[in-house]
Image (tube, rainbow, N blue to C red; front, side, top):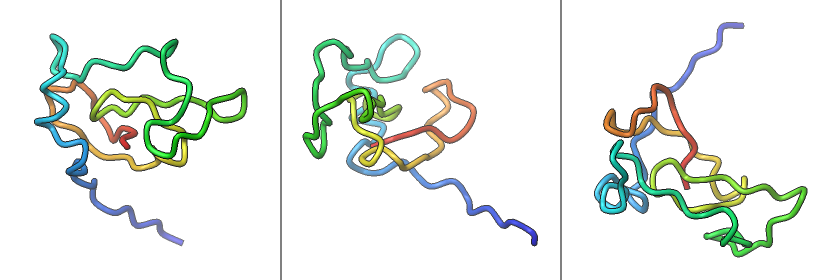
Length: 88
């Protein structure tokens, strides 16, 4: 069976480029939250553990659990990523 891939999704409005660029570093990417300071998901507030891992949203830089950051989109070229990346 032939697999048909869907076109890349646009960046979600809640983590839009303007919000991300506001905290952007020199590369145009958003500044990432410090792993050591974050102990729960930024969306659902579930505590991180050995089994619930931290994931940085490539669109806004905040930290989320897997369930809250499963969307993958193509980000603006200024972010420096070639393919689709995990976002919240």
